Amino acid sequence: MHPGQTVFFVVQPRYMNVDIRVIVDVTQGALDLYMSPSDDTFVVNVNSSTGAHTVSILIMNMVSPLFGLIS
Image 1 (spheres, one colour):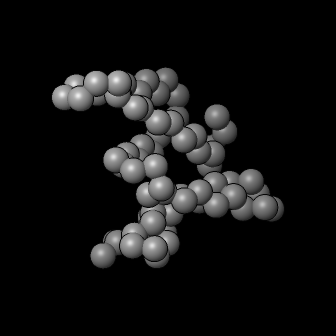
Image 2: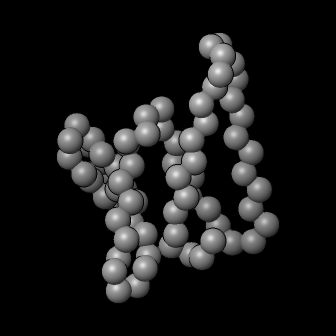
Image 3: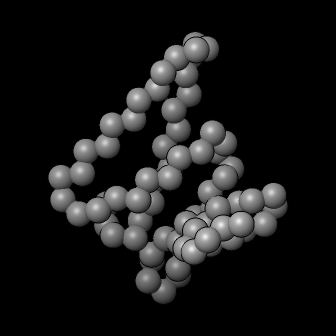
């Protein structure tokens, strides 16, 4: 992946009462990892001129940028 891009990944357990472990191996560069129990928590907007992705969090039908304190 190029810097500024996002990937949406879903883990759905087949059974109840299971432990799910996510292992992320970053060999070069950096990673921002956001996790949520719901698939509609995050909104990704693409900048049409640069192609960079901006991740926002959806709180009670309001979109707030992840940068800074979210109250």
